[in-house]
Image (cartoon, rainbow, N blue to C red):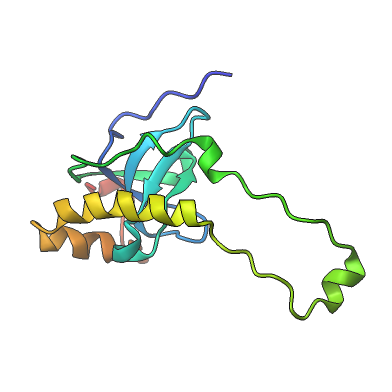
Length: 152
């Protein structure tokens, strides 16, 4: 099936707010739309701890803030980049008694990709210290906030 259209206001370099999942409330930089229709985003990892990940655009909120992506190589980011590695199957009893079970580790290729993408983004953020703090700050609403009346 065809990938869904990109929502208006989302362009490479836009800052998005994640609305669900482990990183809910974090601001991330949109990199590109993948063939599956999901969005590739990054924190950058040094700013707020969000790695390069895939996100459905339904679970994001668009802001008017933009980050310059000049010099960022995005051709290495595809849907295959995010595939899980195959592991040997283990039975229920093996899982229960596994004290020294191997931990799931991030592959070296993924770490290198994270470093190259983040280095280029952080170089453009060096000019604007407030943008680094903005990306590092968490987004939240309180009881008296009206999100429909806010401008992001």
